[in-house]
Image (cartoon, rainbow, N blue to C red; front, side):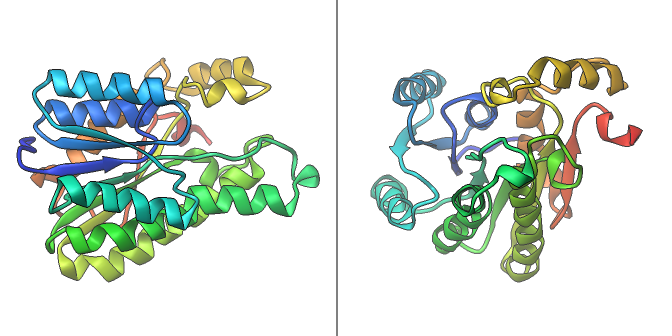
Length: 250
């Protein structure tokens, strides 16, 4: 059910954290992987080495997915090594953490471009390589549907991302391409360290999560693997939450 041999996966923001965990999980189950990164070259190289040790092919491509010209160049690099693409995971994300009254147009546009619009650009380039089948996944967060302090512009961009997934699902479903959102709970990655109230977020999450622990990058990777499998062939256009039950407590 989880045999991905012969498949090629592109994971944006794949050098660290959740993206890296997804890249490793898909490779462990047979996929060849393209790891996209923008700043952390050493992390990308380490991820490539780990995947190649599994006997899988791995290509690291530096590209800012918020820039159309970078996305175009990235797919040119991919096509040099692969004649098809089966899995796209839009995981790269960014955004400023500020109260709404301190946000500027630049903050808004940056978050929307990298967290939402990038999925559209990536999909437009990926679909012609998918041979009328494939999986597209976007990584979101609970801030898309909940008010989180200082998360205004990121939360709004994640909500836009989830809406885009639904529209893509309607359009791409007839082609046999499944499109879904993975919404993760509180994951203690480098991104969380940027929150000024990180310790309080972790404490509250542990208190409110019925399973009693934080979500890990590996938990998110397990869900991504499931959505790539035949077991998920009728899951389409959905937001699938992995949070240990955190979100059900209001």
